[in-house]
Amino acid sequence: MRNPFSKTYTSQEHEMFEFLTQIKFFERMKNKEMARFIPAMHHRKYKRDEVVFFSKDPSQALYLVKKGQITLTIDVKDNFETILEINKGEAFGENSLLENTKRTYTAIIVSEDADLIVIPYFAIQEIFDSNPKIKAKMMTSLAEYYNQNNQRLFKSYRESFGFFSLRQMFE
Figure 1 (tube, rainbow, N blue to C red):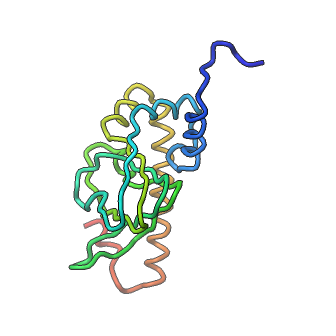
Figure 2 (figure 1 turned 45 degrees about the horizontal axis):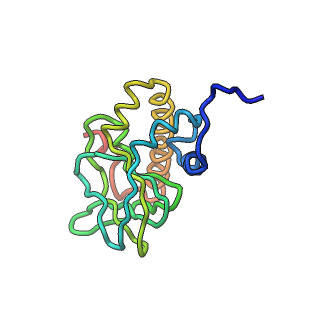
């Protein structure tokens, strides 16, 4: 039997919860926790070749992809080198979950158009301040995400041994 005092959600909210649970940073959350983010979400449309943000910009928002494809690139001398392609149901701008960070890559729309959900940094921090459990869940997911990236980096390094020194990472 359903608790008569429990919150009921609209079909749009349930649709959003379904979408959010596909995304790494929301996968551990209950509906009532995800619901905290809904008022902070802004829907934005982008066109091909639009830059969402540049490397070294302040990390002011987390981006969730509803539609489209985005490439994450790093500047190598005078070129942009693609490090990752992001698709529907994925997120980028993850370092906005941390305080006082700058972007480490440039995000560019490569599909004809893209629909993104933007969650501003200040709204995320507000939710974290009042909900330590939500912060813990997102930080655990972020740590796992960074751990997977480290594993890929080290695998790539082993496969291309000699092109750079890992020691440079810590200098």
